[in-house]
Image (tube, rainbow, N blue to C red; front, side):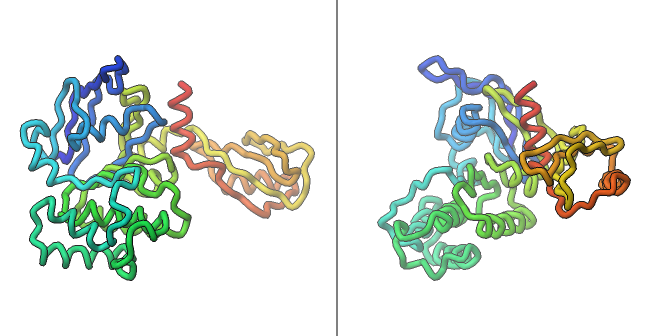
Length: 302
């Protein structure tokens, strides 16, 4: 069964702004799906129509086979939403925020307390259960949003910029948690500006621009469309000119470093051989931007 089925979704605001222009999108049950797009592309409007916060102009939306407008309570019960902005009572205790959310979905208090304890422990917030939300760090508040979204055991988790403002270490621990959640069967729809995050986590991706899906498919197939990857190569020497047989190279501000393009059919071993032929020594090799970022920018420029 499809977790999400969207067909010809349109939304025109009273101001005349056409935010969605006939969007078609299908997310399979069990998917970890990325929805990418610049600010104003239509991502938030699309999510808003899906969870009942925005009234669509036309089209259809189904969640696990049920039309959102015909079965609002059932579809909302299937969804856990992690919004981009913090929208809980900052003067309320952490544990109470999650338990209260469970009550909105009819979860008995005893069960809500048990679920809350497990979620807060899993998300490393149990020690803060009696603290008010205002005393949490930004990263802790992000995790609290996730705990609140999951307390009624939704089959679909929607994450809107879940790691915005989160440090690197915490981001990776959240990635590990989300991977495990998806592995256990929860369908996840992720919107993010962190393209590395999307490439690391998601199996499928759709790119939205000006209210329309301009590209979608499996992450692997989209990345295979990249004709080349750019590497920043740092040498022990300071080559004034760099002629690597079969490779394009461009100087950087650092006299030791050059950007080298490696084609889809080329290998790094071939690059090393070309460097060796020039009597140069590589001391560091880094990818310059992730592949998804390159693909995304290419699509927006086309």
